[in-house]
Length: 251
Image 1 (cartoon, rainbow, N blue to C red):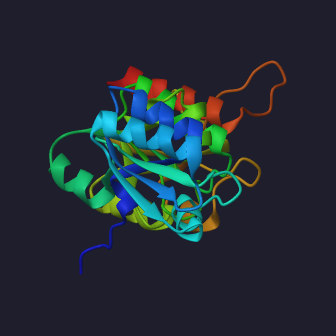
Image 2: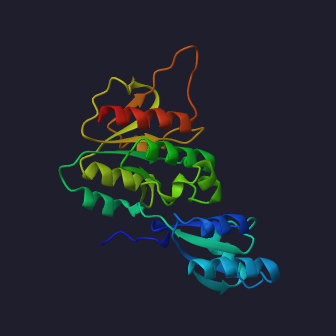
Image 3: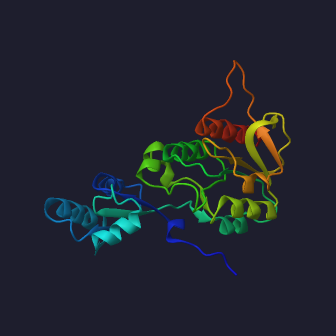
């Protein structure tokens, strides 16, 4: 049976008046549609309607409740959201199929990373380092929302995001496709010295609790970033940046 997909595997959904208008005014972004709550009227509604008309973007009206559900953040949606096309976002099975059997690849996996700012910074670092993908599970990791977009400085729209239901399922699929999967945590072999192979995935765990047991059990090993000067650890976003550029160095 084919793995179920989600509309969020194609779009980054931004919400709130300012983020939506910024997306509509950016010529480098393709906005699929804008959904405006029927409670939004007057100048705000006209401003958004005019911006959609200027870009040739479909404007849909919906109930305020529907907009809150679609945005996933009822406190900050301000009655409007936009689905922005993410050209490099793909379900993990599609990425693996396109990869074929021979080509090498480097991927970061986010396992219960919960801070949107960390997710955004990790997307930015991985994209800058030229990695092939960043696995963002649909469950256990924040959706790409305006907070993630802001932390990524806009890179989230073009980042090579890979989607799977959970980190555990994603890691299993990567292993089946020939990836060596290593968790990043204290007490392991140095990342700088390890033999990684031509297909490798490095897993970054939760900001406080580290790797989940289910994902750690599937890893081929644990690797660590060397620490000096009495420093015990790095923030997950900093650790991910180091890991991304170490993978780039190995190419």
